Length: 175
Image (cartoon, rainbow, N blue to C red):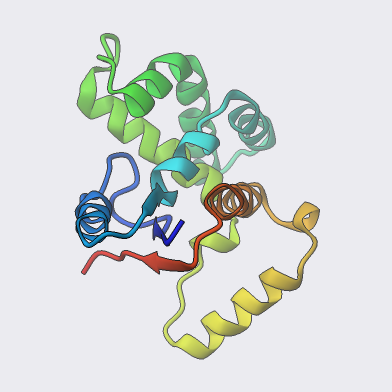
């Protein structure tokens, strides 16, 4: 494989594909090189929207009495109640008859944000130096010690690199 193209996670395009990857992959292939594309944003959401992670989040929030935590618990409960419909809509674009498309997208986003709340992936940096230091710390950490979202992203990246064995990796970011 000549080139592995990645779309990073946790951008504005979390539930639906960002078109830069297919466009770039097509250009690379027309130029005579092989390319594989992985949308880590969508793949991570797919992994996070599984029952066990939401059950754990709902259970951890059930004991709380303050309003923000109560609201997060209600989001987790609603996502669990509609989990099959959410996953079918987000993963395969199947109709969401009980929720409708707008509520399905909103609930999927809120459930994903709930699972990312305390993740290293949801941190914001104002400068590259602290970002570089955080990435270095994460790269040196044992996989088992990472939060669920970061551990899932690690698995996705490892799989993409192992399956494609690229000569180069490109990252597409939105502007």
